[in-house]
Picture 1 (cartoon, helix red, strand yellow):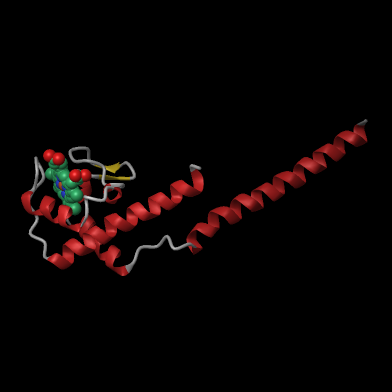
Picture 2: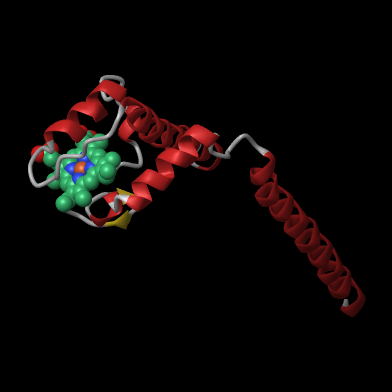
Length: 128
Ligand code: HEC
């Protein structure tokens, strides 16, 4: 009886070890996927940080609450680069006006768009 029990424990330990390896490999695989920002998006991210957009907007729940969460901004087809440009140039509600050139708007949109693409991919991997 005692022997049988220790066999069960051994089996459980092996299963636990295999599970740990499986989880580890799954998590580290993420870095290899195309989940990195392009250079264009990285400059957009820098603008987002330099102009402190997150004082009013959240990304993944981090940031201020005066404006809407922008994590999934690019999920709406009509909210493209032109829409973003219109928002920046008019400063709706309590948002200030930003005089960005078209290159800067493109970078900002690339950042928001890639952010959404990564978010979509993560969701399809983990929230099936
Ligand atoms: C002082 C607060 C504030 C700051 C700073 C700010 N925003 Fe906003 N933003 C808002 C508010 C409030 C709204 C919503 C306005 C409305 O719908 O009436 C908004 C709306 C937006 C929208 C439209 C969202 C949607 O889904 O329709 C975008 C895009 C946006 N902001 C981008 C930015 C970017 C990029 C920056 C930085 C360069 C920025 N905002 C800085 C307050 C801010």
